Each structure stands twice: as C-alpha cells, then as structure tokens.
Amino acid sequence: MNFTDDEKRIIKLLFKYSPAKDRERVLENPSLADRHFKEAYKQFSTTDEIFKLFALRQKLDEQSQAERISARKISSGMDALLWIKEKAAFDACYPVHTFVVRNKQILISRPQNAVGLPVNIMVKSPVELAFYCRMPYSFFIKGRAISQTPSPWGPALEIEQLEGPFAYKQKGLSPFQYKVSKRTFPASIAADPLANKTGIKGSVTGLSIQGCTVRLPLIEALHSGGTINLELELPSGIQEVSAKIERLNLSPENDTTLCKTTFTRLSRRASNIINAAVYEY
Image 1 (cartoon, one colour):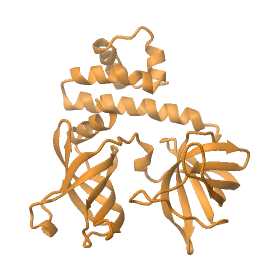
Image 2 (cartoon, one colour):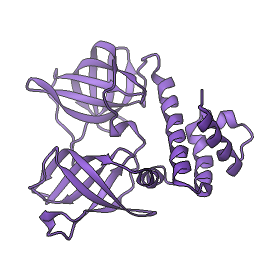
Image 3 (tube, helix red, strand yellow):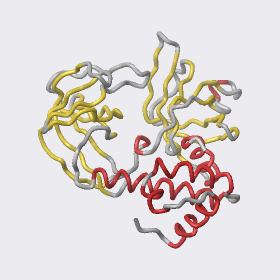
Image 4 (cartoon, helix red, strand yellow):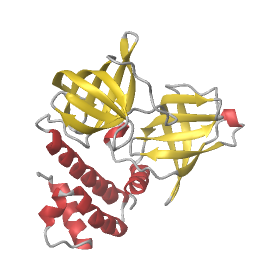
C-alpha cells in the first residue's frame, strides 16, 4: 500500500504511541489495526492530527474493500445497495449484504424499510445490485427477484443475475459505504420551530461519518430533501450537526418518524468526534 509523506508521519506517530512488531501486517488488517489506532487516538493532541489519523484508518478500510472486489467478483458477506424498479424508474434503494453466491444466483439479506419491516418484492421485479469499494470506480449488476425465502442467516431474497457486472464511476459516496455504529445515542432536533424552539427528543439508531438514522416522535411536517439541525449526545459530549433528510418514514400506528439523513457540513473537530463514536475509540 502506498502512503503519502504526511500519512507516513502519522504512521510513525501511531506506532510510537502503540508499538507493533509487524507493522506491515497491522496496516494490512483493519480489524487488527483497530487496537493500535484506539491507543494512539488517546495520545494525539491536535484536531488536525486526529483528523489525519481517522483518514488513515478509513484508507485501510478502503484498500481492504477494494482488494476484495478489485476483480469484480461477487462473494458472500459483501455489502451492497439494492435498487428496485418501481413504476418507470429505479427509485427505491435499500442497504443489503450477500449471503450465498452460486453462479448467477445470489442470495442476499431481505431489504427492510425505514422502520425495520421487510419489504415485499414481486417475483421477476427488475433489480440492480451495486457494490461499492469506496474508490473512484465500482460496479453493479442487473437482475430480477426470484423468491423471498427464509435462510440460516435470516430472511433472504434470491436474485438471478441477468447482465453485468458493469463498472461505473461513483458520483457520490453513500453512508452505507462507511463503517456504521449500531449503538443507540440520544438525539434531538435542535431549536426547531415545530417544537417551539425547545427541541424534539429522539434517538440515533445507526451512525456513520456521512450520516445517521434518527427515530423521532411523529412529525408530519418533515419531508424528504429538507434540512434539520441535530444535537447528538455522543460519548465525548453533545455534537451539533446539520443534516439533509434522504428518506423519511412516518408510522402513525407507532407514533414515530424515522429519518435517514446525511450530514451537510462537518468541521474537522465534529468529524473526529463522530468517527470516535463510530469506531468506538
């Protein structure tokens, strides 16, 4: 793996604070590297150094993922985005992962809606499965839904691959490309006029460096594409962020609103705080 001079300086500091006998092996294995990054994180003193430490940690993830799919080979355990054709366009998208791959038959986790309920997909419905390597180029396949079935790994959807894989250049990164913390954090919509400027209390059910999923009481005035200000109660303190609502699910029967959001602006300090929560440093 090639590193810039600045990255080499951060690596030198990393192993100064958390020594390792085989540095190359550590850097080639993100899960093994986590212990060293966690120790070094406690010793790094400036916002800029911490930001670069997390950038290096994400680069290791990127390289590991890129090596797995550099040959465009689909295998079990890969994360992907499933696009389902509704009416005339592919306008429904869900994060999934592969269970089993046999020739042109692919068994994936059954997609869920914003409140965690399984999505019903008609047999022979056109689908696209996009695999991201967090590099400039990725790939996708075209196929159709075959059946919804139970599996040893949970509810599954069987897909038949019809065309592809096709390479394409990513126009933007997806929140699902980054490691996501499944821990729950308290949150609220800060100073929102709908709440008489006192805030609406809720919780974050999935957090990544690019965005989060927020569960709130039922708020019918919210809409997809809108922007909200959030206060996230993270282990290191309260962090205020601005976020765009990408997907919204209102559930009157449960009196809840579930928002899938992406952060619109993050300072380096805010990025460091969120990364620390995601990686559990």
